[in-house]
Image (cartoon, rainbow, N blue to C red):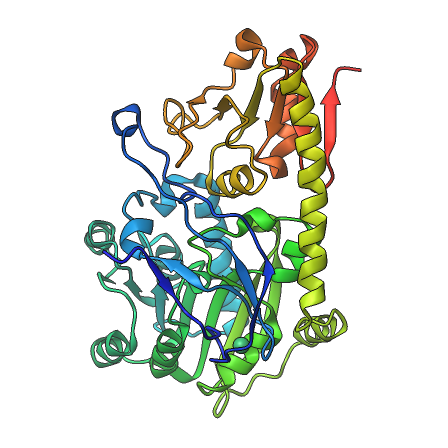
Length: 416
Ligand SMILES: [Zn+2]
């Protein structure tokens, strides 16, 4: 089996002028935590090097891991998280209002998972169709009243949707839009399904929020595109599509919800928010490698400082632990070269406890072991959540323990 597919052209515009701007170190597949029964399986590391297209300004990974490897252990069901259900309820209400979709309109979603978002649209009186390649999850969704086609979306599937259900007033793609290698076939398919006055809604993390919030660890193998709006607009235009609005979201260190319509028949005017973001991207010179190199230098400065402190503790005979076991923490572990230095990881999610980290096989334990095992230093890998983590583990600090928060600035927290 071919493990990695390499491309030498830009995913959005096809240019060959690609420049390496974020040489992130290779990492194991971020979410591939394993039980003890699989410890003898070797888990390889794969490139996370990130390139800028000098022609259109799209930031991307050009080595994509075979989806069979990537999603082999994919067990995530959307509605598991209560917070997400509420998020989808608001999402559907927001889109129905923005688009002014009349009852009975068709809503199509790709990557619809167990149909959580489509259920919310259905409650607004919409007809819904989901498309998701995860067969078991698609079957469950269909049984629960959300018809779901168990395939990868493509122009061929688009034709099938139009033939069976008609054209869509709303077409949604969340997260998947950052995950797809062949975006051209997807967007051509979306255009086919979209009604003349239809709206395409998508959510992606936003590159300038990623830079401003220092969340470089949202670069992992499932995320191959890191979007700005101007490169996307140029790309959409090729398929008779155009952006008309955008909303900033708070999730995952900064993401955006984009709204697009057809270029030839759409009648909505471009929003002030969108035009302001376009202007901001021009001002920040989104096509200049320097922007991303400066970002990388800032990451490296945090890495050097983190390792200086960690290595001092180890040299003095102390044990260093990590806090947080997730996809983003795997990127951070490998890029900061902490995977050889950290003895164990703690996490509050019972599903992760008792597992071993991807590749390096560092044991994951419940956080209450900190009191008894008393590591000299705990690096908070899930640093976005550093405040609740420190609050929850006050007893470890009271015993003389120390936390290191590696980003956005290196900060050591101990009892005053
Ligand atoms: Zn390009």
